[in-house]
Image (cartoon, rainbow, N blue to C red; front, side):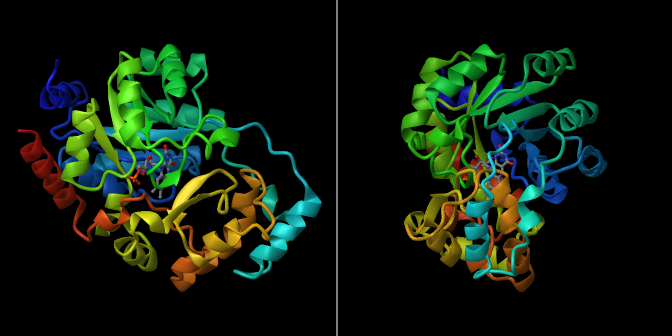
Length: 356
Ligand SMILES: Cc1cc2nc3c(=O)[nH]c(=O)nc-3n(C[C@H](O)[C@H](O)[C@H](O)COP(=O)(O)O)c2cc1C
């Protein structure tokens, strides 16, 4: 049996890393400064490009490369079919949201995400070491083009069935996302995202046993103990999101960053309240009210994202975490307000000692 440290070492050699720690792609929350710092420490930087135009993707990559020649991952969501609109129900949601932020105009839900095909072209053009996916699988022709350019595909999976489908579609690495994870759940079928919320301790060894490709662990990993446990359970590396959000390079709004330090595992909640897709956030006043049985159910993705935009923007401007889109994993309190380079070094030092 391969030892956890030699498995991690093999992964590091393959992906040109000194440390088997990956910054999780976090749409809207991973400025190039954070990726640069993580890469400088020997880990892998990343960008969640969901909301970026092709020009913004190119600009982000240029900024990263101007300060780092380290490894980097660019990430996209696989699009859902267009949502079914229900104007009468949306009116009720708009009225509810108006109690937490500015009045929500009727057109607020009409926005569409950037064009996926154009974003895919921008990823190829940017040429990172790794392109990753969440919420499904890339189309076969895009996978062939990635491979032709020597770009590895890391596919996020929240179940063993999804992991097997990703491996069969050509994924080079599976990212096993446990239900502890902050931000959106990567379930391929959003209707099943809450029912199939599997914790990382059960998910990781099951995926490791099911697939032949390396597996990266994500969800609730916030210190060396988490990384050591993930490697012991068969992972080749750990992908960490929330634990980087208090780093100065993350530029997280202060009220959100401060709240993470006080967020116990039971103080986060999975809801569709912000975007229409299930995601884990701090159980703020808004998130709790949105989950109340009397509240109209959120509109589907991405309509709900549009409907909540005004409230989220006002909350960020006013630094009010109770109405902010304050994503957080269950290990949020492990996040420290330290430079990202120190976070990577501290976590890996601790993990290595535990595994030695
Ligand atoms: C603020 C935030 C935004 C996220 N956005 C994305 C994203 O765009 N794409 C993606 O694959 N995962 C996204 N995630 C999930 C992370 O990639 C990862 O699975 C998660 O952060 C791991 O759990 P942890 O936060 O407990 O470390 C996001 C997570 C957070 C906290």
